Amino acid sequence: MKRLAYIDWMRGLACVLMFQTHCYDSWMSPEAKKSSSLIGWSRLGGTLPAPLFIFLAGVSFALVTEKLREKGIKRNAIAKQTILRGAEVFGMGLLFRVQEFALGYAWSPWTDLLRVDVLNILGLSMMLMGALCWITGDGDVAAARIRTLAAGILVALSVAMATPPLWTTYRPKFLPWSLESYINGVHVFDQPQPWLFPLFPWSAFAFAGLAVGFFLFSDCARRTSCRSCSICRACAYTRSMTTGTATRISS
Image (tube, rainbow, N blue to C red; front, side):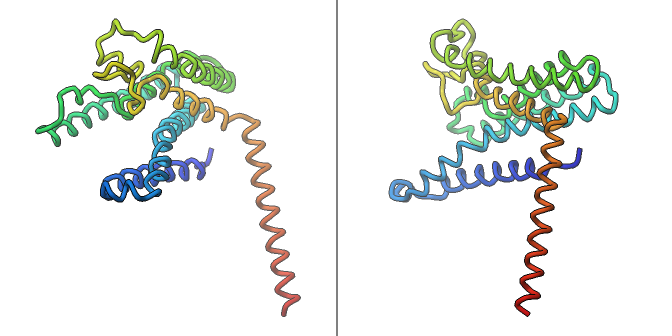
């Protein structure tokens, strides 16, 4: 499969939205934040980067896994490679927390070292996706693709449906807060915090992306892509012919 430009565009959009919301929040004075409506739109745009990054990680995970399957690599080797990659990302998330704590040592509480951030949950989601792809990856490549696509949708829906009770009625309070925080983002507070990144609901974006990524390899997606490309080429040809005719008439 050739490189998909729209995925790169989505990554770029996520980066731009992330940069602008952090920059405006840092550069604008408290008075300007109160008087300008721009900060509201900026913060609204800032809600998109995290789900976009996690979703696109799932898409990329599917693309890599499918290519490895098509090369005939065994599912154990694929799982080892992808799960280790997820572990690396998770480790980077922990190191990033150490760096943040060191930079703000004078005023940062030690509990910030255990705060669940987007890299932590991205790494864990990748490891879970690797396990799911291993479970569904036996046999024929096409059949494994369908199984993994269906499983990705099922897991994404299950995570979304399990989130409300895990945040309210059925909170795993028996766990230490450092572990419960990975379930519902409670951290050191009495209630789960919406600004943190627990597995529920954030991993649902990754599994949704996983399903979309495998769908892109399906015959249906390829036919749609070819049809769209044909329509675009036809429109471009028609436009060029029309422009050329108009130029000749005007001359």
